Image (cartoon, rainbow over all chains, first blue to last red):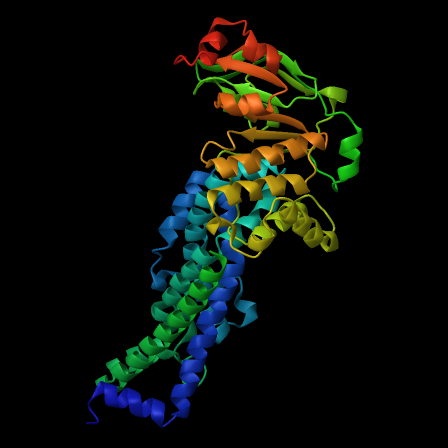
Amino acid sequence: MENNAFYVALSLLLNFDAALFQIVALSLQVSLLAVLIAAVLGFPLGAAVALWRFPGRGGMIVVLNALMGLPPVVAGLMVYLLLSRAGPLGEWGLLFTPGAMVLAQVVLVLPILAALSRQKVEELLGEYREQFVSLGMSRSRMMPTLLWDARFALLTILLAGFGRASAEVGAVMMVGGNIEGVTRVMTTSIVLETGKGNLPLALGLGIVLLTLVMLINAGVYLVGELTRRRVG
Amino acid sequence: MTSFHVPHPASSILSPPPALCFDGVSFNHGEQVLLGPCSFSLEGTGPTLVMGPNGAGKSLLLRLAHGLLLPSQGQITWSNNRCPRQAMVFQQPVLLRRSAVANLVHALAVNNVPRRARTNLARDALERFGLTACSNKPARVLSGGEQQRLALARAWVLSPQVLFLDEPTSALDPAAIKAVEAAVREFHQRGTRIVMTTHDLHQARRLAGDVLFLSGGKVREHTPAEAFFNKPVSREAQAFIAGELVE
């Protein structure tokens, strides 16, 4: 029985294991904060690339699209070099703290949010452009209107970003260090437990992680669907 | 483009509608001349109906006049050299993914109308165009006729001195066409210069003060409506009115 992953997952949850609770809470905090920061930066960036014509725009779109597939370990390495003692931001003392993990996930999620919102906003702009020009709107005035009108698509994009953040392990492992009680999150614990040969616990943690991601997705889907039905 | 100000409905009734002048205007796409060169001026009270077969350049002429496109050659000027407040209603109304009233509030916000005044102005316009019951419904689930009336209401709240309409009724049923034509007359009575394209002769007869007839990218004639329908000068217009298939 103790070797059954579902049993382990269930008993972890039912026993309200304090260590598990801390790991789950940190996972959520890091990923949600990273997605929030990436959204605040990425959505306006995507909209701006959709709206303005400037030299190197095509190259920028290609880079943004390509960075959607940025390997987490590479992102982790970049942030590691940036934050290490000898690095440019070494003085901040962020390495091996949750702050570093947030930064690494922002680097991973930002291209997804920017590239996908650029695509959506550009599509919407094609439909709205003549009306906007007729209304005498400047490009900077078009941006908030377009972002608001793309809100349902942006919500889905946000979920894609959250999926990427909560699922990745390479980057948080490198810059967080998987320190128990400080920077240990769901994915790094799963790697650790698997390495230790504690497969039922690893699988149990995996089930908890999956359930959480499902719940968050279901919640966002529900909110989006209800609003969509109201607004059309 | 145009800079809009806080609408003053009363002021546009008192002043005559601004005159529009095309001076040797043409529009090219690559080597191909799509419109012009054409020269005319719209000075009377209108409404001006721009007529002609498909591909004659009617929509192009409207977009050039409204400033959505820039002419390849020639100049487009307004009386007093001041660009008037203007609005345009498109064949397919472009509505935001929000409620009907929010669409009007957005247009007012864009034009710097003070926040407190927006909702009342929007509700008044919805009432005028018979859309009060729809005010909180999503704009994009309204019927075709309601959507076009909402587009007209959006133009109305901006108190334009000039209103361009590009085939506003081509996708509508008779009842909806009647409502749109009534709205156009209301704009006209308020002193707004109306410039509208249509290929429906009956509609043109009902609305036109003067007719600008285009075919093959050229202005063939610009005459008062009565003269146009009774004694068209150009061969193309004669054929068009006679119901022949003009190219």
